[in-house]
Amino acid sequence: MQFINSNEKFGIITKILHWGLFVLFCTQFFLVYRREYFPKDSPESTQYILLHKSFGVIILGLALFFILWRKLGSRPSWPTTMSAFQRILAKTVHLALMFVMFAMPISGILMSQFHGYPVSVFGHEIPTVVSTNKELSTLCFNIHQILSYLIMGLVGLHTFGALVHHFYYRDRVLKNML
Image (spheres, rainbow, N blue to C red):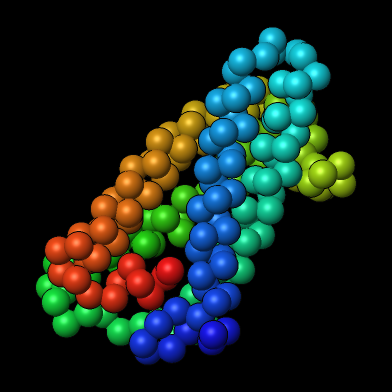
């Protein structure tokens, strides 16, 4: 088992970051939508949103590390079956995913702080960097919500592309990340 990426396959660090971020994003959607089953000001609803905020900050840190890791390391070579258009599409989807992994937690943190709510990571509060502004909080909420739909679409495209490579082209794209 190799730790770092090579020209043939991804290393364990990249795989853990990739799948860990996927699981954390799925957890985020669960926490937000599960929260809707409780009254708005109930302890359960509050607990779900506090967990959502904690995981959001963790996602931001992991996303920053993942982007840095991706820039500093090597990557497996593109399959010879990929056309120039497919490579551009793959790069675009990957860049969009990286942007959303970064922008989504930022918009969530700003939404909370503009609304006057602190953001903490499992009880450890992070510094508030903005003053209360309900209009900007609403704007950040809208951005956060749009980004949530965008990430679902991007993950769908990413998954579809991996499955096409696996079942149609029968290359190693999906196997490299498993």
